[in-house]
Length: 112
Image (cartoon, rainbow, N blue to C red):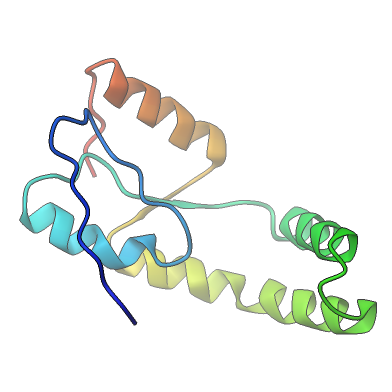
């Protein structure tokens, strides 16, 4: 794993997204810069279909490989969400996250 510094001074907030974003929740909380931390909770079947469609369109690998990989990810998704929430992220649907971030920008923080 590599690291690199980034500067957020002067920004009203920053958003870290992706499967590893939960890794920085505790450090952000410790530094007093955490306004919210969210792990997207989506219907697993829909995620499988979206991922498969994207990967097939991009011809990333053979279709059979993509289906097997997608099914494996489908099975592990609950464990990924448990890990992210264990690191301090709040499981939420996309609409809930968008409303929370809009509230933060409007000055109505939702603290986790």
